[in-house]
Length: 193
Image (cartoon, rainbow, N blue to C red; front, side):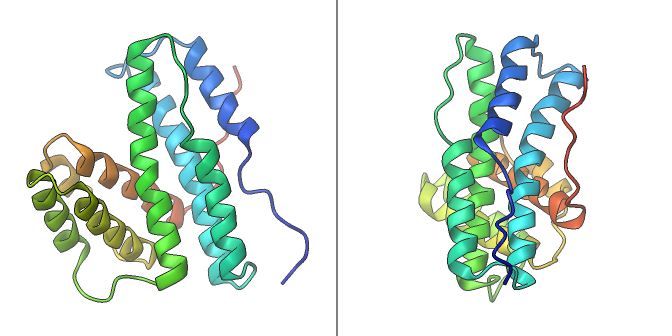
């Protein structure tokens, strides 16, 4: 293990994204706005993917990997104050998606991938649980699906399109970001103005 801690993500980085959101006119129907939100989400997912990869490569031990994940989670999931209600809702959606990413990463580090069931089965179970208002169970199923994605199984994003709008759809959206990040953990460059 190297003693040189890598910096996976910083509070400053998150604040830069939030600053851009504050400054820009955001219209979720507009491609540039949608891309900004997606980049912000993917950027965090990439940091998570790098921690998992370093854990898998024995660069980080379990305890360090978990504490790195928790550190980013505290930054990214802390409440963001926006005067603009729509922006507040949009960032809340990103945070909701990322919540599942953090839980799945932590579950993977501590327990490895889910043993039985496919990604589809877990997501279907999550959607059923959400309909029954069993949100903890729904999150649990999405987290299991996330551990399988981390393990290299393929999430068919077409599934996400079939989900009714709600928490499960947002969590699956987060898993999709994580899948992209695990395959190509290149940093999303903050675009120069």
